Image (cartoon, rainbow, N blue to C red; front, side, top):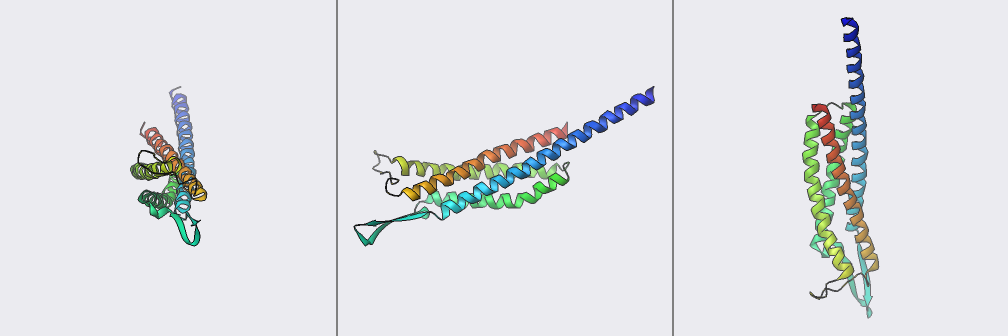
Length: 190
């Protein structure tokens, strides 16, 4: 009787361990996919903003107005921040693959949470700084005599606005990555 009970408890324990391992592996695969999505979003945002420029003729072909991303330091910071975050994500992909293979590795997951949080802060600050300038480009500010330039530079404004989408998408993905890693660590410690 006691032998049968111990055998049944052992079977239940093994089944629970296998189920938890499968769930942790599923979380690791989702982590990998989210890292790839964030990499595409941040890299796309950096490239899109970094290649944005538009030239408008003024009275003659010799006098022209030109708008480039590096005319504004906020856009330069945006490109640098997104490039750093994309580089980090590229370097963290092998660690994410390692978690798929060995879903029980806890120390590396803690390190990834710390770096993910730092990259979230960097990405948020870069995207917020650029969003403020994009808002001014679209709406202007009558009190400060800043005119909305998007009426003249349509292509420029469309590209800078579009590049913000990938960056803010990356912010959402980083929040999900941090939550997933926290869940994976808490599941292993109980």
